[in-house]
Image 1 (cartoon, rainbow, N blue to C red):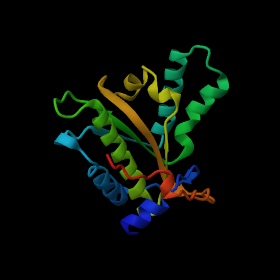
Image 2 (image 1 turned 30 degrees about the horizontal axis):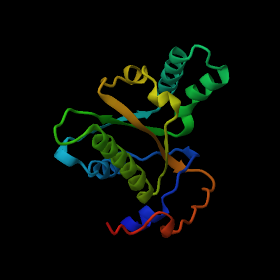
Image 3 (image 1 turned 45 degrees about the vertical axis):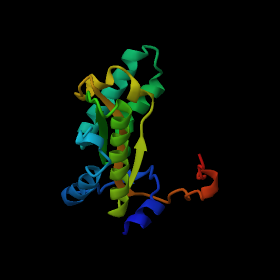
Image 4 (image 1 turned 45 degrees about the horizontal axis):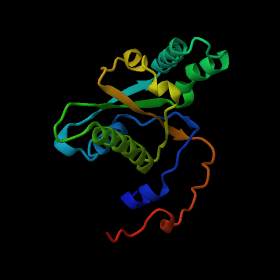
Length: 186
């Protein structure tokens, strides 16, 4: 699939099953991610692969982090968090690795990590796999970094779910460019 077709046709796939991208596809996917815009060549990102039984352990940690932050969490919400990693056979957790830099502010580093996450989605689609970017309130809770083994200076920007698509995807909305693009004349 050519680049413009991949960009024009990528769609979030909420129902994903085996097979997930294998080693060759993952190599292509992460090669694409590492080409994200990167002012100062800081490489301000890190990817954690979660698959197999580790998905269940991740779900337990997500529920524990949420319960620590909110002891009154409902059983329904706790079950939802425990089951979330089971939505797909492969998860990629994208973390921004924020670094002190006189030239590259944190926001640029966060955006760079976001671009790397987007590249994972586009490359997965180009290779025939489905993917969806999810976060949710647990992503921003103080205990998440520790639960994932991340440094204090890192920030989770995406939980990417990857696999093979089941069922039909929602139709892509058609947007008028004029709703988002205008000329600036100074």
